[in-house]
Length: 263
Image 1 (tube, rainbow, N blue to C red):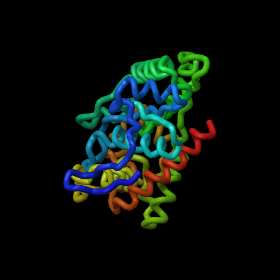
Image 2 (cartoon, helix red, strand yellow):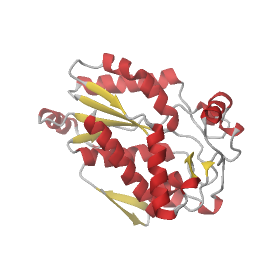
Image 3 (tube, helix red, strand yellow):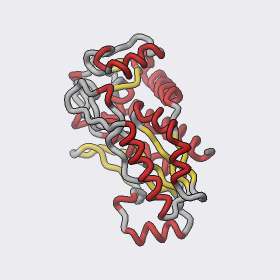
Image 4 (spheres, one colour):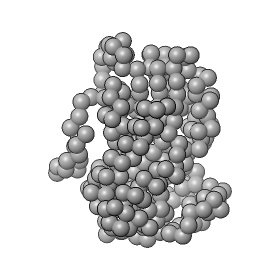
């Protein structure tokens, strides 16, 4: 798929793969013809520093889902679950969070609905770090809830995601040390690609850049994001570019598509 700028931001040239944009008979006919794989992006609406809008993860999920679907072929993209598990961001105004039980119930209802229509493979695709572990924990339950001939898989390798972005940023700019995982150079570049009109580049800052080890991650989860980073950034947002964003999106789509293809 090709992203190109216009005066309103970014437009995408693509064939229709988003279920919510289609008509019911068209979907039924496609399923009957053998198009039985669907991706469910799982995002978030939460703070992303002083320079990015709240819907970074939701928008990234939708676009990443489309890129992965193109690579897989004969694959639909379900409506993105836009709000996720973001309790650790609630000290920053505007963040909306679902309780884990609520989020997982929504995921289960999505899978059951899609299974009833005849989809045989449902690919859960989190684009927000806080959704990775909950999805991994509920995968067996999701498979128990759908029809016997349907399989639910989930991409939950957060470490691989971070390493993919680090590799891209290093190759493009030599600034891999600015990848921190949240509102950093990689996410900022992605949003600069998708919605440049909403990015405040002049407000891009350095955030928490020390090692993100298990203790720090646990502190974030237990006590909140604000206890580690005052501006809501993990990493450093400076040095962003559309080129980095495009290559981060493409590289991660390759990784995720390979995972779903082999699952």
